[in-house]
Image 1 (cartoon, rainbow, N blue to C red):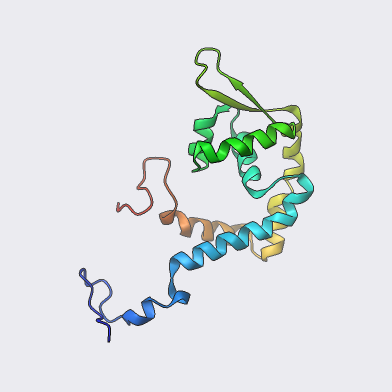
Image 2 (cartoon, rainbow, N blue to C red; image 1 turned 30 degrees about the vertical axis):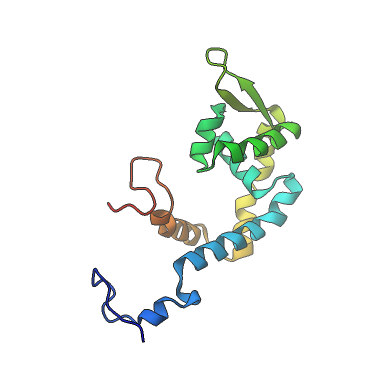
Length: 165
């Protein structure tokens, strides 16, 4: 039999065996939801010629461009080595440009091309299509997103995932 005690006592009175059930795991729910969200976006993004990760890159660049590869990687919570091939594919598609900074050749700036800027107009329909596919309102989606905030890395001085306030 398992013990129902914890070192902090935070789980007193909770069935420890139930806590180990896959269906009760927060990590499983989040990873499954993430996979499903990407599959919901796929048919909406395909007509734009974008994958979900490429869409995220474009969203970040539509907010602010040009920016360095490192800044973009930080914004997207990605490793620059993972981001670099995505940016190269977007460059091949004619949507972004990559250039070295004149004052510091170590820095690779990523900017939008005219085609990349124009794509934003087509992308304006994406959020509405996603809302329709999931049957949720903007407010409901915002509540889900905000509920996940404690598990996402903070960029603005708040605690990182796993840290206490």
